[in-house]
Length: 100
View 1 (cartoon, rainbow, N blue to C red):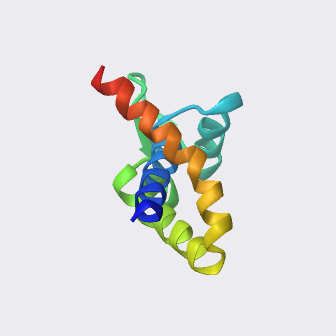
View 2 (cartoon, rainbow, N blue to C red; view 1 turned 135 degrees about the vertical axis):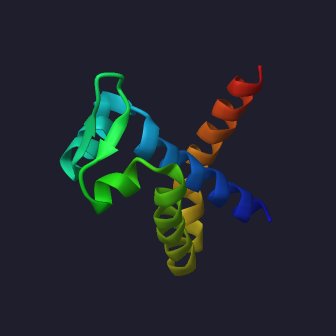
View 3 (cartoon, rainbow, N blue to C red; view 1 turned 90 degrees about the vertical axis):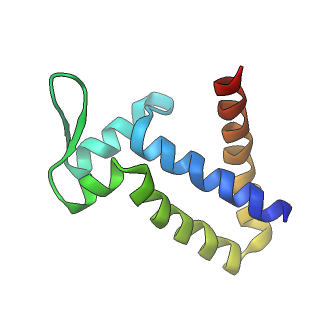
């Protein structure tokens, strides 16, 4: 059960980073730009293609992130767990910050 919770939190955190956040050195806005995401005058993202539309939607990209996380766990459970753990801890910190 612990592994499921860690992997689920990591999936949410990575999907959130891809869809909405800047990340270190603004890596995620750059990634969104490369995929074709543009922003209107109000800063609302708009996809110019299927990938760009999918990356800006956390519901959409979390499915793909979840598939990658599940596949990684299936192929190398210990490595996947330890790679996912920092993202899960970050997700907990973000959630706690949102509550307080």
